[in-house]
Structures are given as structure tokens and as C-alpha cells.
Amino acid sequence: MSSPAPTAKDLADVYPLDIDVQRRRYARLARTFESRYGAAPAFVARAPGRVNIIGEHIDYCGLPVFPMAIAPDTLVAVRANGTDRLRLANVDGAKYPARELCCPRDIFAIDSTVHEWSNYFLCGYRGLLEHAGRNSGEGLDVLVDGMVPAGGGLSSSAALVCATLLAVQRANGVELSQTELATVAAAAERYVGVNSGGMDQTASIMGRTGSALFIEFHPALVATPVALPKTDTPFVFIVANTLVVADKHVTAPVCYNLRVVETRVGALLLARHLGIADRPACRDVDPLTFKIVMDEYFAAQGDDGSAAGEVQTWIRRLEAMLGAVQQAFGAHPCGYTREEMAAALDTTPAALSARVHEGQFPVRAERFKLLQRAQHAFSEALRVVRFRQICEDGSSSSSSSSSLAALGKLMDESQASCRDVFECSCAELDELCALARRAGSLGSRLTGAGWGGCSAHLVPQDKALGVLQTLEREYYSKRFPALSAAQLAGALFVTAPGQGACIVSA
Ligand code: NG1
Ligand code: MG
Image (cartoon, rainbow, N blue to C red; front, side, top):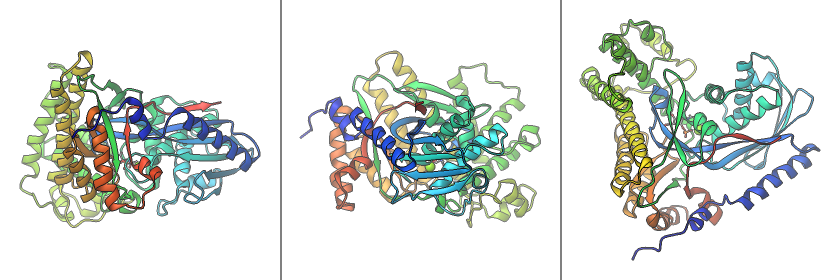
């Protein structure tokens, strides 16, 4: 028996973000701030989390991604205190204890070996000072209220770094453009020891209600809002958290940072295979990414891509790269040792390690799977470009359920590639995807770095309740029987593209 179609109100209530809840949250933040510091905050900066719809682990390859900002966000309430103290507190003081730090000393001494929530604040502040060329800034009283689940693949970290950056630029009388904010936030977050790309910060800063963002990183950071298509059958996105906390900070040397190194070495070897390693843009640029190698390869042939439309150019180039990847790495399906990679590049393992910044972001592996990582990167970029094209075709005219099915298929293919080729899924993510598809999801995949964290599902509205109920019954009740209603509401919810970061009150 099929469930009755839920109304928009039913769906909105799945995640407690209605206006009254938000009013109470802001009022509580102001009250707590005042009782803690003896004065009201001067202003509140907010920055949202994000769901990546498609395009996983390719932002740091310079290839385009397709995320959306979501409603859950982080608030940073601030007041200058006229001293050199940074007093940081969090409304969840049990999980994130208050810290008193020194400005600027602690800002320039972030210890990336400890996993510490205040580091993300220090990152944001350090990013601002470095960008503005200042060696110190205002001492601040700060209270943070975050609603983005931590370690869940929804970018709680970027939400805190972006909200901090917005707050400290205002508190210090500096004004950055949106592109500068996103670029500075992305670079700043690397001070916690994860060699991340720039997708999360760009989505958090530049998100638009109702639109996803097609984000390009090279040759320049450009985020193009793309409206989701108006289909005959309305659809929603459901987020389901595995509740397996993917602690990227701890696992970075064997997971995230390792993937970054595999794609970086892959780019160096691919450039050599294509005979373009000595072009200045390949030789001197740091980091060399797959996107730069692709652009340089075509530039070397005098092909500037203007002969065909933008989408056709992307597709033609990405397909050519997939062919080249097969030729370059096809003989090594089991991966390379460090010695083999160095030999193929006429260098030493130590020099190669330095070239890919292992001093700052060390990794551990017996074998580096360059073939598989490169296959994932270029094929995932193809899926991103195709996804965008279907959205654009479908927002000019009302499109059919077949375009919805095509979007879902791209998401499913992305999940298969993440699981089998890039190896960043896990059993719980695979299970959530399988359960959701069985209950009517058209496309299900992990979102964010993976190895735990959240999944995202494209679901026709009339199937949404069924998917939610199935996941609750078959996943959450079985694995987490003690979960409270509030915890479940934070783990399993319907979402839509929301607005990016802003200063809420001044
Ligand atoms: P999460 O794990 O959701 O924070 C990370 C990276 C992104 C991107 C994705 C994978 C950080 C801050 N963000 O996202 O840049 O590479 O993984 O697509 O590490
Ligand atoms: Mg993160």
C-alpha cells in the first residue's frame, strides 16, 4: 500500500527549522551571550552547511562540483572586548568546552595534531589576518551555536570557518568579496591538517535559495547558480546520516589526504604521459591538478574549446582524458608503490613526497591506486556536467519524469564509482542507499568525504514519506534503538537549496 503524499508542511516539519524555532534559537543565543559576557553581542554571523548533490572528491582536482547550501547552519555571535583575549564558548558546552585564547599568539600557533573545536575559529581568524596583511586583530567575546551535525559530511567545519571569517572581518572593519571569502575560508581550513578542496566553503558562502551551484575552480573560482528543474513529478532531497562519525582529522593519512596525494601524483604522471610536463603551467604550478593537465593538453594543441558549446567541450575533453588515463595507468591496475611512482617521474620518493606536500599532510599506503582515482575523477566530472545540463534543460520548460530518472541515475552511478573505484563509501552508506532506492528513491549516494557521514537521496515527493519511514524502521530503529526523536530529526530530514552566509544583525 502506498503512503499518502505529504504536504509541504509535513515535509518542512521533518527538520525543525520553522521560523518560531529559529526565533527562539536566536533569542537564546543573545540571552546566553549576555549572561556570559555581561553585554549583548554586536552582531551574529551565520553560515550554512551543504549537501553535495554530485561531484565527490573532485574539488581538489580542480574539476567542477554541484552542491547546494542547506538550512542547518552555524551562528557566531560576537562582541569586541577591547583586550587581547579571544573568549570562545559554544552553546553545547559539554561537547565543546569554552576556551580562552590569546590574539594574535594562538591564531598563528594552531596545533593541527589535536582535534579541537576552537581550531576552526582560529583558522577563520588566521585566514582574515593573512589576507588583510595584518599581524593582529581585535580581542573578541564569542558564542557559537551550530546545528550542522559534526563529522556528518554536511560541512559543519566549513560552516564554522565561514561564519567565523564573516564575523572577524566585520569585527575588524575589513570587507572581502564573496569570492575572496570563499577562497580565504578554503585555504584557512587546511590549517587543521586536512588538505581539502574549496567546495564546502564556496557553497556555504555563495548558496542561493532554490538553486544548486555549479562550482568551477580553475582557471578561477566561479559559482554559477543552477535552478533545479521543474518536473511533472515534484521531488525533494532527503539526507540520511549513517551516524558513523567519519573523523577526517584522524583518518586523513589513510583516507582523505591519501586520496589527494593519489590524484596529485596522478596529475604529474598524466602530464608526462601526454607529453606536456614541461609546459610552464605544468612544471611550475603547485598543486598540479587533473583540471590543469586537461586544459594544458588542449591548449598545447591550439584548441581553446570555442568551436563547440560549453557542455560539448566539457564532455569531449573529459572523455579524451578518460582514454588517456587508461593508456597512462592501465598497466597498473593494482596500484604503484612509492618507488614505482618516483621512478616513473624520474625522481626520488623523497622529492616526490615533498612535491605533493607530504610534509604538511603526511599519508600512509603500500600502493597508490592512480588508475582508479583518475577514472573516478574524470568520470565524476562528466556526471556533474551532465547533471547540470539536465537541470538547465528542465528549468526552461516543464520536463518529464524521464529527466528526473536521468538525474537519479547519475547519482546512483556516482555512488557506484565512489564505492568501487574511489573507495570512499562504507557498509552503512551502501545500506542506506539500497534501502532508500527500494522505497522509491531515484538516486542515492554518499555526500561529503564519505567513509561514514551522510547520504543524499533524490525522491519524488509522493515517495518521500515512504523513504523516511523505511529508513527509520530498517536502519535507525535496528542500529540505534535508543535514538531520541530529536536525534532522529537531526539525522534524517528533507532538505532544499538554502541561502548562503550572511551577517544577521548589526
Ligand atoms: P566534508 O567531509 O563534507 O567536510 C570534504 C572536503 C571537500 C570535498 C569533499 C568530498 C573538507 C573541509 N571538505 O567534505 O572539500 O573534497 O570532502 O567531495 O575537508
Ligand atoms: Mg568538513
